[in-house]
Length: 348
Image (cartoon, rainbow, N blue to C red; front, side, top):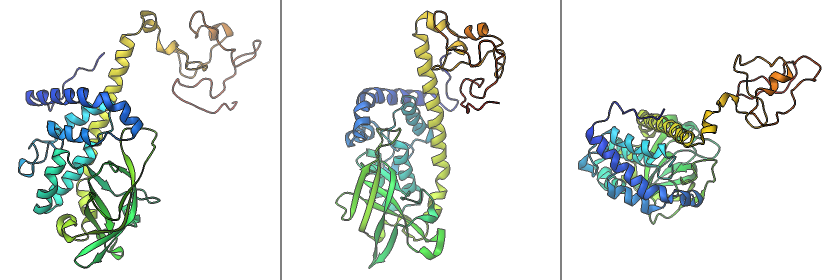
């Protein structure tokens, strides 16, 4: 049956907001998604349109330029994009950047950057993952060394979501390699007219084709003391850990909505299929040229060649059974397996 249940945390105002989100997605995002998949990014204009519609950073307080909503407003946007497999506009990473500024930044940093994130004028990214180290914070090699009153950043990052379009990058770097976790700090890098900052490839991934996942390079990038997140060195690790629950909640919301979307898409396809196709039991439908598992037991073999043939649709030619016509069926791993499993064809 179709999924029509209502979120327990919803209310009439959120339902009205969801209508706005759906209308924006269908009018502005869906039509350009195919082109964005080929291009590797959605472009800045879509971000600005989302900001003008009031869909970005909705749980940021009004005093910092946000809508003053709560996480439910964010969840509605993530859900409706995930249901339609739209991944190009990575609003979740964008919002996470805003929350680092909200929760750990100084008032001056909040005032300077949060309104730009809310409006979509500036796209946010987090530069943590590095080549060869993954997201292991202990293995980070990017350095931020003191230079006068400020810092000079050198290093490279990879697999950075929103990296190609980012106007603001939170860079995790080591300020004191001798202090372990206490030697990490986060810096706000404004990428516009930033000498030494360079965007590398937009990575060609197996999925998420419309999302700009990029390499970033920092060659003697100079930042002032006002660009150290929170204004204190050595707080980067603790700032990252503090916001992990928020990030994990986003993943859960998005994953559930994606499953609902997949189910709904399959239901719609089946409901519109020919009656003869709808009536055929899926357990009797062969996958490629492999036989399906018999309905009476997931591991039972047919007792005869005649029984073997009954598993195949009428009018089709079944492949020869996996035993001599004069012999008794022999159990072989790879033949009598559940429909969605794979095993080696080793005789037993």
